Image 1 (cartoon, rainbow, N blue to C red):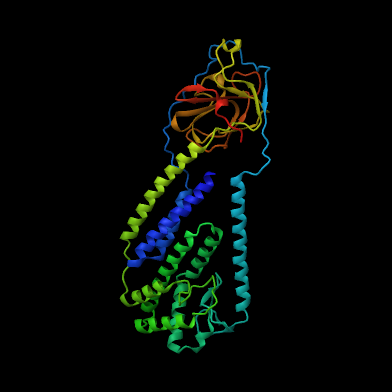
Image 2 (cartoon, one colour; image 1 turned 45 degrees about the vertical axis):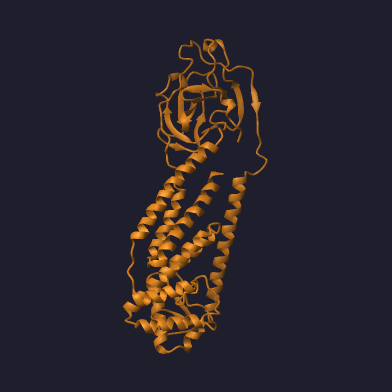
Length: 437
């Protein structure tokens, strides 16, 4: 369930980033790279949870240090089995998300190849430095292809004056020089794959607006175009394209993805040419990063508090219970439970935490190969007599991770896992906390 909560948190953080940038962009010109940086910042929600727990010393004591004989398995065996007949809810929901993403991505590629077939029959336009064709419809100008891009122009392009054609071509060639068509394609793929995060569309809208503003000013400067001529051509292109066919691969001169306020801002920027001020954007990023840090801490707390202790083995076969008194232990109560299975069976972390012992020398020799994991709020678990240790000291493990293999190291008469659960150094009966998974 934590993964689904993280996905929801990503949506919230993305909205926060997008709305912060939108607020800034209303009064100031922003760089499209800032929008890309904001997207990368939002992905920080998927970084590992902050390790905020305090790691203490292992509080376990080996109760059989003074015993003169090895442990023996008692005859009263309690078997508890649990078959997972239904698919877990989280797996089911994630499967739906993944299948939907694949289907939407398939539709994108299908539209892409349909567009390529459509422009194959378009009229070539040879007065450009790159391959160019004119369509028999008034779609937005767009670029096809990644290695060898082809500029696709609308039908109305042929009815413009030579000066107006040159302005549109200059604008589109500036897009290609900036590789904006590739970035537009990547944004489209991200939006389709991550369709469950509608905030990405808002962030993409800001990116397109910033990209068009940058392209406008670059085109005017690099091609020495009059601001008035450029603005009038932009306005004419908007009028001629008011009933166009939308193309998802377009980096359009007329900014078809933009709204009326975006057009007004574009014209204002063309005339005034304001510089990009990054101060407020940096402050917004610091603010969002602070929220991200707080969110990650809260998510970590949610994960640890919501997790229930799970059995460290798949096959639950208990050979010795907590508190069992036997002569082999000098009539001292058993501090844990013994779980029996075949040698080499996987041992799993009972809960998320940090490994503080993972060897055969830190604890008493009778433990053999032993692992101790520190959990939040003073909880610890111990796994003894392992045949194999698959973690190292200081490693962060999630609940259910494979940490070792069952064995017969230390003082034993048979293969089993000795499992202990303690809180603030006080051993507790694991069966009062463990839940079958």
